[in-house]
Image (tube, rainbow, N blue to C red):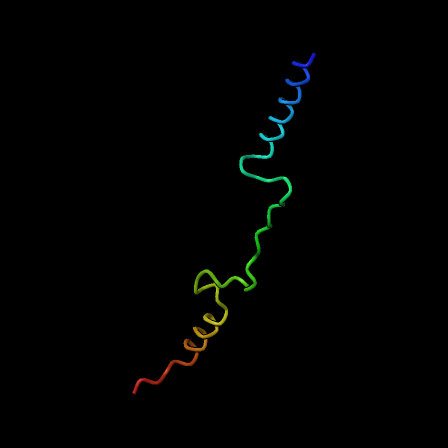
Length: 66
């Protein structure tokens, strides 16, 4: 009878440790990753509205080459 109780407790403890994963402590919650506070920048020049406005300005009003 003692062997059965010991086996059951050992099994339950082993299952709990496997589900938790290696090296994790149950008393310390994992910190959530923080998002960057700055907004994402355009990935390419054609995504940047200021760059596109400048291109339109240059196209409509070309600089004088004298």
